[in-house]
Image (cartoon, rainbow, N blue to C red; front, side, top):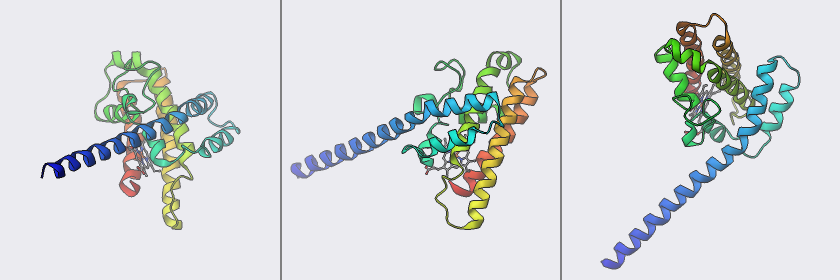
Length: 197
Ligand code: HEC
């Protein structure tokens, strides 16, 4: 009896370790994407129509870590392996792209928050556009119709992310204009997750 319990505890520990190692490995893999994604984001911010963007995205898409589940981790909180919002941890809250977009969709920012965070939000929107450029072919789908839907969402996400970035840096930006742009972007996330996640 005692012996069985001992084994069960052992088995539990082994399983817990496996989960822990697996999660840590996933974060490590996602980490490798951060620098090239940020470089691509900076290039998009400079000129969204630049011809070399496709090549940059293609190169990232070929990385071993460029799998849809690992790429999507970049949207999570910085503390959970995501890119985060702003240059320094927790300088802008919430410090994760997905949570930040959801928060701005739900409630317009205060005028103070808008002034303080507009630059960081624009950065996260360009990060989002960069991530989108990498996931166009990361669907693993076979049916033509499904691939078309996936591609449509990607195109929408890229466009809405850039519109959101521009809304953040616009001279006449208002809390309402930021919320509107965040909502349009969040709707694309929700629609694609509804169909494919
Ligand atoms: C073109 C389709 C598509 C779009 C657009 C999309 N996602 Fe995803 N997302 C997915 C899929 C598919 C998964 C599930 C990946 C997996 O685990 O295999 C996912 C998973 C996630 C996860 C979970 C990651 C994890 O490990 O728990 C987060 C966070 C996420 N997406 C955030 C976002 C945000 C934020 C947006 C919009 C800015 C967005 N996604 C737009 C397809 C999409």
